Image (tube, rainbow, N blue to C red):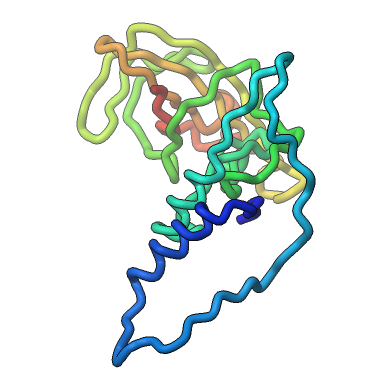
Length: 205
């Protein structure tokens, strides 16, 4: 994890957390701190301006959490330029800079994706109508509102098997107000585009 380390108090606190995990055995006579990678620190303005508010610095919090849990267990999600939902996200370090990639803005994406998508039982009028009801994990839900379809094609340039792959996604809301992201594998007409089975892929917050 990249970090701008110039504060003695911050370094001392991080070292103290790790020192408590050391088994001293018969005692420790000497302890040496080694910096395996060191680079010149960039100049940093420490006086806040009157024009723009200073952005909050959470790097100290990131370092404390990573020090306790491990850097591999601390991450954030970043967008990947892919129309296939499960390929449109990647894990990056919390302090990694943002790139130019963005998630599609025309259609909202759920806050939670199921991996893999889970099959559901449903009934819908083909080819473009949303489900009237669906059963997921043994619970039958009647659809009160729906929006779609959003058609997603396979990435044929990556895999030949995806040349005819099609998914039709719908945002549906049940009578209890819970919102789900479901899709039909196939265009609802041509069997070559998919099995025409239904899946639940995500849950909206």
